[in-house]
Image (cartoon, rainbow, N blue to C red):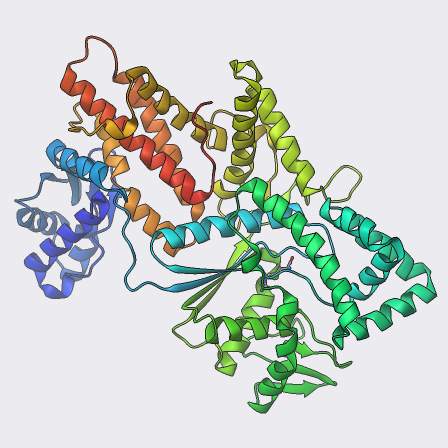
Length: 575
Ligand code: ARG
């Protein structure tokens, strides 16, 4: 473990145990970055209160136990411990990190099976910008969990079933299969849906046909199922186009849409009723999980079978959670879904616990995705009010990226390749860099900016380091050190990089990709300062200093590239 903060935590805990007894071995030493040293430990103050001793005295006692510490420890103020690590220690750890193919990122023991429910667009409508964010955040979490050694099961819970499919299939028959497939593949699901809806509302005969079609679909009529497949396959081909452009790792094998649970719903209800978890209330079968009440103080129902016998969103989610625990053997289930569904998931989790389908040792977590807003602060829409087509949005990102790099003199093919990476990287990084549960303003100008915490800035930072190696006439992998941070800017960058492994573990465990973005942004900023203040290739730089600085460049580059890859942000070679 090279993370300085973790190393310090362990060392101060040992010191606490030695000085004050083993019962203090688990106390949090409160290690924080400091203005006056690398870190400070604030534990003496709180501990002094408990021990009824003077804080400075407690701090001195801790310091005395840290005599063999690779750095200096000073007591300051009312009892802070100011800790500065030796340059030698930083050098050794940085060298170790450089030699480590995993850059200090540990693997978890024991490993877990993590089911990640993400993306989940609805087939009856267009995949919209909100699904873009659940897709991008979910995919980053999947990559992170795989990197730390967990077994990831991706579940794309498509909205691919329900009463709208009656009218959708009838509309498909009206316009012909070929035309329908063409529209759906092109991402015109919304238009398709709206056209069906207009007929449904205005044409009695169509409405009747649609109703009958719902019944034949539900009864499993082979020809109706074939038509449903025609519709779904074309829709999924469009989703795959979007995933492909974004570099999202979802495949057809990860599709586990609502329709998949259809055969399980009857038993889901029967079992919940038999176990007494669900009860009939005004004709509907409901679970009343404890602790949920409506505005009138009455218990809130999770309706799993409507009074007309129909199943709904909650029924499917009850079947899904049971399947994920029982069949997929999940230790952890992450639901990367809009924050507006928070109540639904709290109730589903509570009902599943009540039914014994979600044992205590399995955690189910709603990774809430904040709403996407337009620049006007309202739900993201076009001026005419309808939601924006996702492929158009991605096209625009690439167009704007093309314009931004147009003057750099690349040939057409290279330029197209860079523009694609910059456009997609900008959109993805923007989604990831703010905490997933906060609302997020979709703003092309900001996300495509080349300064600040943006995708293009991060990509540019890596391209700049690559260009240093091109000038040096060597591959980054050939820069092996030794790393000897002498200047303050070298030292600050090295010390920061050492925190990468621990940060990745935390970000993964806590589902917080935005903190990885913040870390990488800080890395790029510290690198900029280093590069301004510490010449690397200038002829008057001594060979061993040059070697050290090149190694630090290589370590920075690998850290940035690994971090961006874990986020799913593409990195062009040049920019
Ligand atoms: N299709 C849903 C929507 O667009 C999201 C599904 C999320 N997953 C789940 N298990 N309910 O809102």
